[in-house]
Length: 450
Image (cartoon, helix red, strand yellow):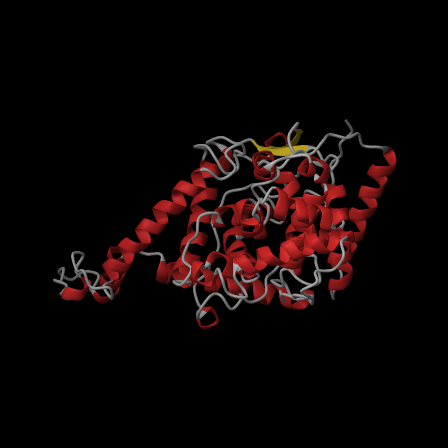
């Protein structure tokens, strides 16, 4: 198997953000304080790349990682037997991959990024390693403005805002009181007795009490911690007891908890950790050292933007509304009917496999549970680059997933089809995405803005 090291030109290694999406209430009013994660991750790390289909990803690390530079043995893509069949790499394919990398690197090095051209290039797949995917995803999500001259200013402002939000919202009442006492008390004077109101007493049952809110947040944090422990357990980047994996989980915990506090109507919903994982991984492994160190702040911003396209799917009160998950599932059914009525009739009337039994997870988690991690990143290249929004392309991919296993579905009964759809079989990802691109348009003409 041929493999190659792919390096990023210096001109295309910087990436800076745009302002946050509207989901974060009052974010634009926050400022001061520097932000970002103290994530320790060696800059310049490369991802050894092979043919996009047929490989998974593993991350090697140990307790001494933060004290030594990373090397190529720390990050590798290994051949996997699950999900995507292995295929050989021809010389022509290697040349084509190099040309694609050069095209994307050139586009990202321009003073003014042509977003339409970037979307076309990214829809065909972004190269692994070198930070190209991290920069491209930030642009595709609208986090980076098209003008490179604005990147540094926006980057600095948003990372400071994130740091301020963490300081204000993620500290316990004890920490806040201690900080206030440090400010109010003379450095060399006697300790002063602090009066505590009944409302701010730790045993207060009042809903307005800072302690009441803190204990509520603790319950959410515990749920987040449990889910993070289960996030891609086969990847040492996320799992295990190494210093790196612990830092990564702590950063993701802060992102998810902060999102929950800023969005009390939604809070944290199980599975959001899976949606965050690809973003945080890509940003943390950026070869630009400054960007990698600030992966936490950048990931939060992009996570907010990504969820703004589908956040109503996580709100149970909206399930039956025009923007709820049931409406989206209905659109998937209509898309299948428009492209293959035979398969639609078999699933809808013969076997009666309700899309809620399988597509609910596909849609809400953006397919992160259906494919290996490397394939998820390739699929997301196409999702994020779609002109009409992530959800429109997501429904196309979900419909294509059904069409690609049509013969097996037509020969199966309810039990067999349900098992097949809940444990999606191996498939060539490039073929799947091409089928999705070739589908007839969604008859609902539903368009979501980024």
